[in-house]
Each structure stands twice: as structure tokens, then as C-alpha cells.
Image (cartoon, rainbow, N blue to C red):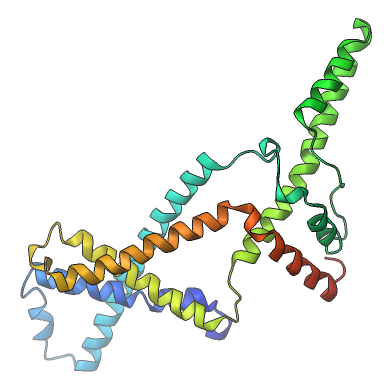
Length: 259
């Protein structure tokens, strides 16, 4: 297996799973003293083999804890996004209607969407009233044509919104070459997960209720909450990446005129 082709961020998250796994083993040993005595007493295994087994078990447990926490946080984010996000046509002023951004995107795409603006409510009402003023015999066909044009107009706006969301997330993602960020984030997430597990364990393991256990755990859980809130805020604030998207798209246009 060529690890050089494996995403650095995922690799660090997986390997770093040893941290929460090892913390979970220590907490279990604290809750059940002497639970691993039989393992330590095995004379048929050398210390290197024992260490390897401990690291492997810690990695499996930690990866499971990480997967649970990631899924839990993702579920919360999805629920919040589902409640707060509006349909694209319900957004009256949107960044994907910015003319400078559309020009930048059009230089990147070989077949960009049609450059139209979403009908305002008053425009649609004016068109509908105009249709209602024509003879009844022609009104049904005219109304059908009007609704078809409205749906087409909303679809064109949705195509711009779809591309904006694509580059919105692309700009927010850190560069693959930003090794320091990936190392820091991989380490931090595992420390945050281990601290969250430790805080939950305080309710079930009285021996863990010491300030030197609680204080560091609270600190890292606080960082986890702050990081997730800031991340969610950046994702939901579509305007926050408008300028960066224009710069990013301009760079792509210079490298590859058409995608």
C-alpha cells in the first residue's frame, strides 16, 4: 500500500485514533482495577508484542469512538442545515447572482449556465396579471407557458447556485499541501474526542473525578465546540467566500481556460 497516495488528513485521523483509544483503556482500567493483570502476566508474549497488541486495540477502539463522534457531529450539522437553509429561489439577495463571480465562473466552464436573474415576486405577479387580462380561451395556454418560463428561470438560478456551493466548499477546504494544518487538526480532533469520552466517563467512573482530569478535558471539549461552531458558521455564510471564489476561479481560468 502506497501511503504517499493516502490523504494526509485521513491518515493522521486514523493513526491519531490511538489517543482516544488509549484513554478509553486507561479509564476502563481505573473503573475495573486489575482488569488487565492477566495480560501483563502472560509470559509467552514479549514486551514488544504486548505493546503492539495494546496499540492495535487502542487504535480500533479510538477509531470507533472517532467515527461515532464524527457521525454525531455530522448529524447535528445536517439537522441544523436542513432547518436554516432556504431554497435557492427563496433567497432574495444571493452571492451566486453577483455579476463579477458569474463572469469568473463563465471563464472556467465550457458551457456555463444562462446568465439570467431570478424573477422577483413582483415581476411574476405582473406577468400573471397580464395573462389574466387576455381572453379566457387563450388564458390556460398562456398560464401554462408562464409557469414553464418561471420554472426555467428558477432552474437557471439553481445551476448558478449549485456551482457556487461547489466552489464555496472547495475554497473552505484547506490545501492538501498545508501539512501543518492537517497535522494540527488530526492531533486536535483526537485529543478533543478523547476529552469528550473522558467527560462522559466522569458520570460513571467516580475515580476519574479529579481536577487534573476534568480541567484538561473541559479545555479540549471547549475547543471542539468552538471549532465546530466556527466551521458551521463558515459553511452557512455563503457570502464569506465570494471574494476568495473570484480569486480562485480567476486562477483556474489562467491555468485551464475550459473545464
